[in-house]
Length: 215
Ligand SMILES: C[S@@+](CC[C@H](N)C(=O)[O-])C[C@H]1O[C@@H](n2cnc3c(N)ncnc32)[C@H](O)[C@@H]1O
Image 1 (tube, rainbow, N blue to C red):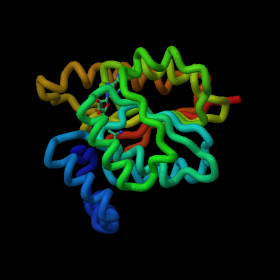
Image 2 (image 1 turned 90 degrees about the vertical axis):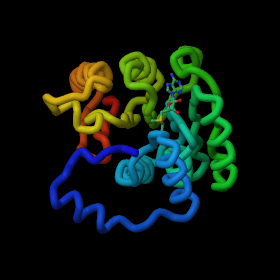
Image 3 (image 1 turned 60 degrees about the vertical axis):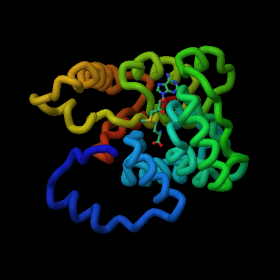
Image 4 (image 1 turned 30 degrees about the vertical axis):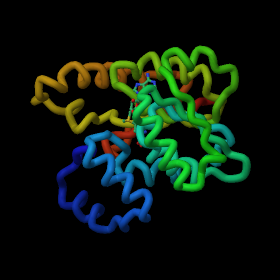
């Protein structure tokens, strides 16, 4: 779904090296593409899994599950008793995700919560080692501040779409992306200025914000 943000020959070369996804993930990628449901790019999902494998979190929170593609990617990289809580607003997506997650065999590692993360996050008492934010862009600031309170020290914040199809770094923005681009630009400044996080924004997929909560 995500448009490329880099058009160089290096990007084409890297894409050509990417192995094909395994059958269920490939089916989900095609399903999302056909129905125009935005999910992580393969490169960003690979990076997400690598980050999980390195950090070995026990408790992960995902905000914005869609059809469960990133949820399955996270769950299959969890080790030991690692668990994922994932929040999804759309009833339709919720049902589709349940089906895919059950087919993936990872349902025992994924706790799906239906509802609005803006209402659910303030009620959560537990803390997380890893939080992945991938919901509506205009809500990023609020979701981020709630998440920061729920993140353990040395925990990881992983945020998608910070290059927003390349528009955050562009002068020519189509009318329908103007507002969302402004939200993300404002959010990016806020994100990198956090004193409690060591942050970086990486040109992976649609732009990944990575923040580690300092001791
Ligand atoms: C970009 S998609 C998530 C894609 C998914 N993370 C993946 O890569 O497979 C964003 C999802 O966030 C959900 N969403 C948006 N705002 C939300 C909110 N406030 N609370 C919970 N879910 C929300 C939307 O319904 C949509 O399914």
